[in-house]
Length: 370
Image 1 (tube, rainbow, N blue to C red):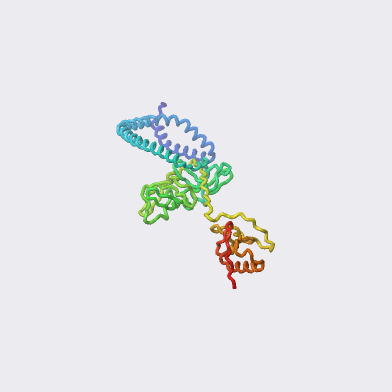
Image 2: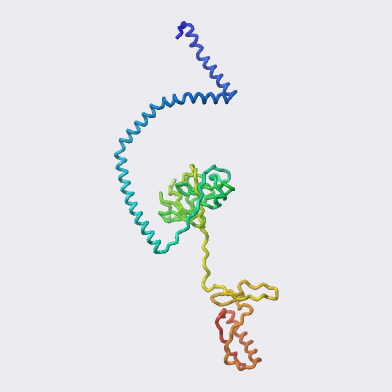
C-alpha cells in the first residue's frame, strides 16, 4: 500500500462520493445512448458473477435441504402408518372393483349387450388465449383437416373444458365452460336433479334452473346430462360448491386457467328413427295417370287401420270392390243396373266410413223393391 499523507487521504475521502455519483450518471447516459452496449455489458457481468452467486448460495441451499430432511425423518413414522392404512383401504376397494367388473362382464354377456361405439379424438396444443367476442376461449392447432368439427367436445386431463364453436383450416376455437355464452345441461349425481350450468366469466360457473324442491348438495359430483342431444351423458364436469347461501356453483375438474393440451372428441350421438306405427304400412298399388291435368293426392293408397282410403274418405279412383250377388244373378241387365245404382247410393256411407278392405270381398244385400 502506497503511504499517503493525512491531508491527501482526507481529500480523497471528500472526492469519493462525487466521483462515484458522476460515474453512475455517465453509465446511465451511456445506457440511454447505446442500449446494445449496455445490455452486452450487463450480460457479461452476469456471466462473470453467476458462478460466484452459485457459490454463495450453495451453503444456504445445502442447509435448507438438511433441515427439510430432518423434518421428513421426524414425520416418517406418521407417514408410514398413514400409507399402510390407505393401502389396506385401497386393497378392499380393489377387490370390490374386480368382483363388480366380473359381474358386469357376465351380465353383459348374458344380455348380449351391444357396447357404444368408441369416440374418435384428436389431441391438440393450446396455442393462444383468444379474446374478443368470446372472452373465455382458447385456440388449438387442430382443425377440420385433422377431423375437428363444430360441436365436438374438448376434454382436459381432468375433465370437461368446452366445445368447439369455430374452425379454421388448421385451427379451432374452443368456447370454455366458464364463458358467459356457455350453457350446459348437467346432472347432479347425489341429488339426482338436473340443472343448467351457466358461465359468468369467472372460474366457477353457476347452477341455474334446478328444481326448488331438490337443491344441489354441497360437494356432489356434476356430469353432463345429455339432454337436447348437445353432449353425451356422463362426462365429468366438477363438484358443487356454495359460495353464498342459495348460490350454488360448479368447481370444474379442469384447470381452465392453465390449459396446455386438449383432446377433442367426436361423439356420434345421432338420432334414432322410430319405426312406423302398426296399421300404417303403405299398400303397393298402381297409380293411374290422370288425364285431367290434376295431380294425384299423395295420401291415396295409404292404409288407415288396414283400410284403403283417399284424403276425402272415399276409396281411391279405379278401385272396384268384388261383389257376390247369387240371388240376383238371373236378373236382366237393366234391372241389375238400376239395383247397382241404388245399392251404391244406399251404401255410400258404408264406403265413406272406411269399411272397405282391399283383399276381402263383400256382399251387397238386394235393394228393396218399390
